[in-house]
Image (cartoon, rainbow, N blue to C red; front, side, top):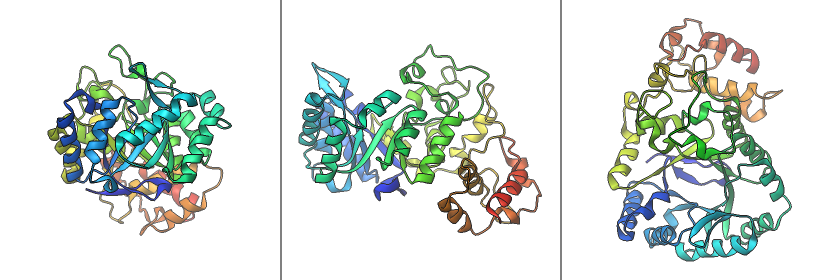
Length: 383
C-alpha cells in the first residue's frame, strides 16, 4: 500500500483509506472483521464522524490490539441526542460526545481532532472566539488530539479554514461530478436522485480548483470523502455524465487532485476492500478517468489540465502533468510563492526545454494547449 504525507501533520497515511459510516448496517462482529481485514491490506486511516454507539463500538473493537497502527480522524461537534445524529457547537453536548468517542474507541488520544462539518461562513466565523474552539485547543495542548483538522463540503468556506492557519488537514468531498458544481451550503441536494446537473456546466469549478491548489501550496493535506457520489457515478442513468465510471477511476481522479493524500472509501464487505486496494496494482487503462470524461455525451473538461498523465511520454522527458500543476499553483498568486518556485526548480526538466513538437497535445483527451502552457510556464518561472 502506497502512503502519502498528510499535510502538516507529518503522518504517513495509506492513499486508500476507510470511511467507517457503513459499518453500523451490519452485525457488529461482521463489521469488526471487515475493519481488521482492511488493516491487513495496509489501510491505516479511518474517519469516525459517526456519533452512534454501535459505530463507535465497532471501531474500538476493530482497533483493539492494533491501535498504534491506525490514524483516526475523530470529530468534535458530532453528537448523539435522543437516538439521532445532531451537529452542534453547544458544549453541553460536544464535550460528553467526544469523551464517549474516546471511551468507545478504547483509546486515550485521537490522531486528528476534526472540527465537524463547517459549511457556512457564519459558522466558521462564530467559532473563532468560542468555547468550542477553546476546547479544541485545550485538547491539542494536552495531547488528547495530536493534530487539528476540519471537515467541509463548501470550497469557499474550506478556503477560509485553510487560510486561518488553525488546521493541518481538511476532509473534503471530491469527485468528478461535484467538481463541476459551484459551491453550495446544501450538499445533500447533490446526492438526491432528483438533482439535475446543468448540461452547460464545463470543467472544474474555479472555487474548487483554487481550494486544491491552496491546500497543496499551504501544505494542508486533504482526505477525501464522497469520492463515489454515493454510488451515483457507477450508473449511467444516474451519472451526470451519462456514462458510468468505475471505483478505480473515481479513486484515481481524487488522488490526482492537488493536495490530496488519501481517499476514504466506505466498505460493506471484504470484497469491496479488495476492489479499492486493487488500485495499487491496477493498469493505467483501468485507472483512466480522463478518456471517459472527455468522451461523455454530457459535460466537458475541455481545455483544462486534470493532471491525468495522458500526455506521456515526452521526447524531452518533461513531467508535463507536474509542470502544469506547478504553473496552476503559481499563477493563482500575484507573485510566485518561494515554495512553488523551489519545487519547480527541483524537477529534472523544465518547461523551457519544450521543443514544441505538440505530440503530447494529440494524446490529451481535453485538448489542452500544452506547448503554449510550457511557454507561459517558462516565462513565469524563468526556466
